[in-house]
Image 1 (tube, rainbow, N blue to C red):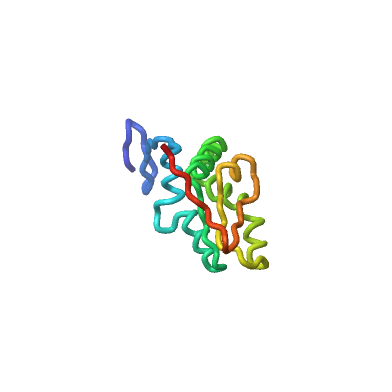
Image 2: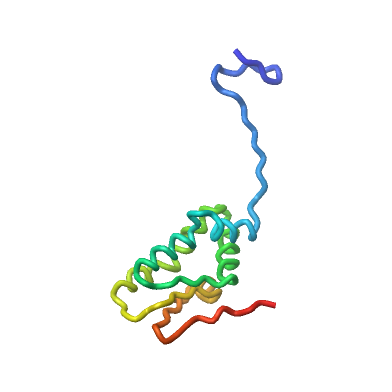
Amino acid sequence: VLRSGGRDLPRGRLPVVAVVNPLTKGDMVRILTEPRNAIVKQYQALLAAEGVELVVEPEALEAIAEEALARKTGARALKGIIEEIMLEVMFELPSLEGICQCVITEETVRHRKKPLLLGEGERWEKRETA
């Protein structure tokens, strides 16, 4: 029998207390983009299989992070939010021809507008932030 603070503990169980800091918006954005198997990279690979480049604006990443924080479910919310945004597009893309880019903007995230689908003659110009 182990003793902890004057109490007897059952064998094989140790009390573990872990203190974690809540995730920030910056942490959420990094989770979306930095790991080798990041959610955004997974969707980029899925669309690349269809010959389509996925572009996610930095403002859109921040909007996704803010929505995940508002849901208060941590990083788990990130995948669900992106799935909501991409669901319709993922079904439509195989039947569409001539699409070379799919762009997720801040408007797409905040107002659940459909991602922009650009054809071969069109290219999304990334906006410079000051």
